[in-house]
Amino acid sequence: AMGLISLPAMLRNNYSKPLATGTICASGTLGQIIPPSVVLIILADQLGGASDQASTLRKAAYKTATGEFSMPSILDVTSTSAGEMFLGALIPGLVLVGLYIVYILFVALFRKGSAPPVPYEGKLDLTFAKRVVLALAPPLTLILLVLGSIILGIATVIQAGAVGAIGAMIMGGYRLAEGKRNAYYPAILALTATISLTIILNLYELNVKSIKPGDAVGLILAAVAVTCLFVAIAWSIWRIYKIDDTLHGVMVETAKTTSMVFIILLGAAMLTAAFRAFGGEELVKHFLTSLEGGFWVQFIVVMLVMFVLGFFIDFLEIAVVVVPIVAPILLADPSANVTAVWFGVMVGLNLQTSFLTPPFGFSLFYLRGVAPAVVKTTEIYRGAIPFI
Image (tube, rainbow, N blue to C red):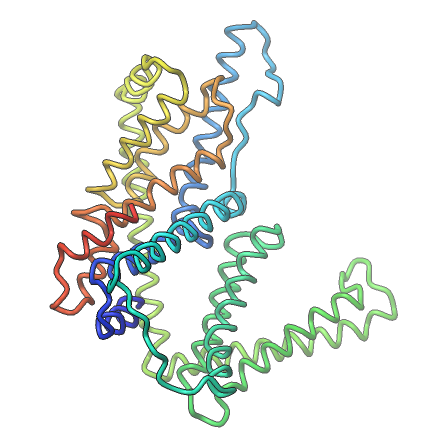
C-alpha cells in the first residue's frame, strides 16, 4: 500500500530511487517490532514454553549444586506474554523510528538532489484539515484502543483482536459507502453506543450478583446501548458483505494466512521434537557452553546465526524452529541476568532486519512487485542496506 501510494509520488518529484525505495521498505518493516506485531505475538508464545524449560533446567542445576529441592524465586526464569512483549518493544521500536528519521534527514540535507522539496498543490484550509482528520483519526484511535487494552491488561490479545476486527469493519463500512447520505450512520451509532456504555458503567453497578434496586435503570440503559452497538455492527457487516463482496475476500485471505501459520507451527513442532529426540539440543547446548566468554558471547553467536538465516528464510520459521532450541539454553544460564521479555525483544529486532536482507527480504519482494519498471532491483537493494 505504501509503495503504491508513496513511491510514484516521490519518483515524479525526482527523489533518489534508492532513498525512496529504502524508506518505504524500512518503514514497512517497523510493523514487525512496533505493536501490534505478529512477530512479537509468535515470539511470546514460543518464549512461554522456552521459559518453562529454562526454569526446569535451572532448578535441576540448583539442586545438583546445593542439594536443595526448592530454588529461590529470585533465581527462577519468569515467562512472558504478548502484552509484556508489546510494552517491552515499544521504546526500541520508537528508537528505530527516530534513527530512520535522522538518517533520512541527513541524506536529504547533505546529498543534494536526493530529496528535493515538493510544493503542495492545493489550499491548506478547513476542508483539507477535515479530510486529514477523517482519514487519520479513526484508524489511529482504533490502534490506540487495541494496544492500550492489551498493555493495560484490560483485554487479552484475542479480545483486543476482536475489538480491532469490529472497528475495522465499521470503518470499512463507511469507506465503502463513501458519498452516500447515510455513509457514516453506523459509525456514529457505534461511537454513541460505546460512549454511552462507558458512562453507564461509571454511574451504575451492572454486576448482576451485586446489583441494587436503583441499578435497574442502568441495566435497561446498558441493554439499549448494547442493542444499538449490535445494530451498528450488523449494519456495517451487511455493507461490506454486499459492496464488492469485500467481506468474502477478507475472510478467505484471513483463513489462508491463519492456515499457513498453523501448518508451519505444526511442522516446526514436529521438527523440534525430532531434533531433541536425536540429541540435537544437547549438541547445540554443548557448542554454546563451550564458547569462552559466558552468556554474552553465546548470545552474540545466536544473534549472528539468526541474522544470517534471515537472508534466506522467513521470520516465522526462525521464530518457531530456532528460538525454541536456543532460548531455553540461554535463559537457563545462571549468569544470564536477563528476562524472557528482553531476550524476545532483541530477537524481534534481529528478525525485523530479515524483511530487508537480500536476496529473500520480503519487503524487497513486495516493493519489487508494485514498483514501476524504471526502478531497478539493485536500486531497491541499495536503498534497503543502510537501514539494515
